[in-house]
Image 1 (tube, rainbow, N blue to C red):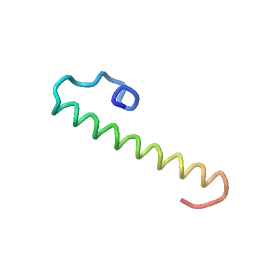
Image 2 (cartoon, rainbow, N blue to C red):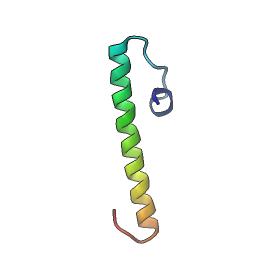
Image 3 (cartoon, one colour):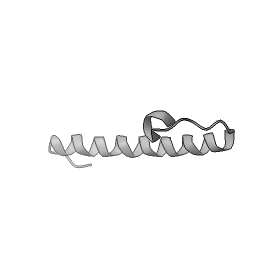
Length: 47
């Protein structure tokens, strides 16, 4: 997830890795939300 959403290598230290993971999950959720809104708009619905 870190590589995919943050475009960087995951940290080796567990604390930093967890921070990166949380950030990647946030980016994923925002991406999903934006895609859902775009799809709803394309089909004339509201999101």
